Length: 392
Image 1 (cartoon, rainbow, N blue to C red):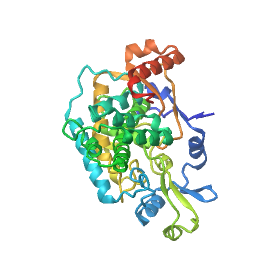
Image 2 (image 1 turned 90 degrees about the vertical axis):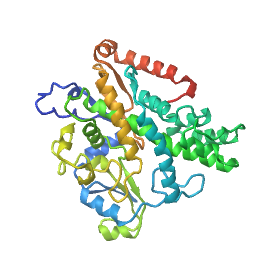
Image 3 (image 1 turned 135 degrees about the horizontal axis):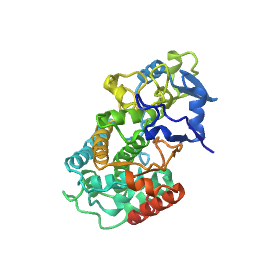
Image 4 (image 1 turned 60 degrees about the vertical axis):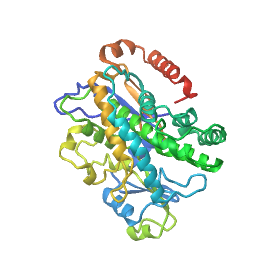
């Protein structure tokens, strides 16, 4: 059973009248327990062999003590038993970066309707925008179901690598798909498919989740607030990387005597981003606070990791998320007034499970019955994604 968090504090001058102040974010029990039991602490013991770190200064010292190992890196862990060194990882990021730049250069049609259940609606739009007409065996790797079922991911990759009639390399494919088209034998094709999943899927997942979080936390937005500030604030309250693992090592007991030689460490931006010692009105969604803050130099703020090694994908995520949010605001889409709660499950990418988005007049009518709205939205999403085999 989940427990609802306290509603956000009223915005300055809103007197509690803004629609977002009536919404409750419902965290999974283990996430809620972290917030209830450990908010404001710098170090807590989570398990006999695991320590949680939430203090900004202590987190900085620990993450600066050494670089992440290959097993601690979220995207470029070893793939099929093969290590991914930094030059190769950088090359793959440059490759997917070319596809992201192409997507950024394409205007979103003014009549493009992005209403529906988020983040699924945004994920499907981004998949089509980013991956164009890539072969089905590659596009299916964007399925959200694969995110929660590693065995299905492996089966899908193996089947795709075994299929005959590989696509011909060329400009009709995305740059990341050409890595697969140019691969030689089965093992290289399998590896290329795994890398396609590792590089392209997180872009779609992260952006659609980040925009869904922003809509849930603050929609409708004041006209004068920038999309970038909205996203910075959404990442403060719901950080994409809500924990950062560091396996036990001899460096860490030297940083703090409370850390033993057998302790693994879990940095917790989920807590540092709400620490009352670091933030004014920490539970409130206030994007205007970023007018006076530098996200790259704000203690305890780590939505894309530590300053010593930021996530390389952030330069792709932010511009595309701003582009998407700009279209949503420009077309008058808002969170359905009838939706008053949204769940945040315990998964690696922190975000609300489902947010119903539509035009103000339509959503007010369509959400008088929240259960009926949820069922209808799920059916529409399933029909729209039928060709992707149980996407979502």
